[in-house]
Length: 194
Image 1 (cartoon, helix red, strand yellow):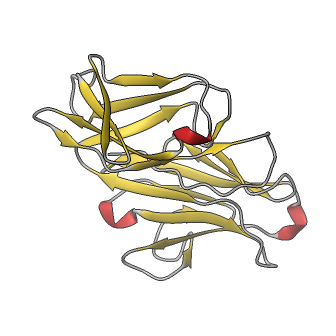
Image 2 (cartoon, one colour):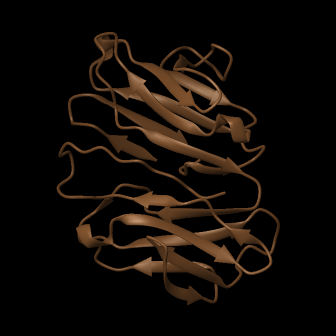
């Protein structure tokens, strides 16, 4: 997953390419630097701690890259890259839980005119179960295989999405951001429901 603040700054990349994770999953983050002299550092702000950088009580890394081997619910929060001068990348909001997640392809943010597919997935198989999809609290539709495609997205498709699978429960909410031209400045919160 790649998110941009502007074409001059740092790009925060995440592997696997989702920000909603199941408890126990691992994740790798890195600041891809357009300006290597800026000295980018990975930081986060969770509900449990103040703003801290990778290697200080969480993760293993060298400042601009970080690995978290076992994500826990308390690792949920906002992650970003920050330069020595205080410039920041866009943020990614990780959500960690145990039952259901909602993730999108391609990764967020979505460019206007493109298609995006939302996948509602359970932790334990089978994961391709019928799912109800909601936008801003209202039911959009039910999909028998647990994924829904929005064709030719526009700014009106921006909103808070979630999904529900009968007998499994509901995913956390996911904000879908729609941007215009590639490289234009924007800020987006990306969540994948778990």
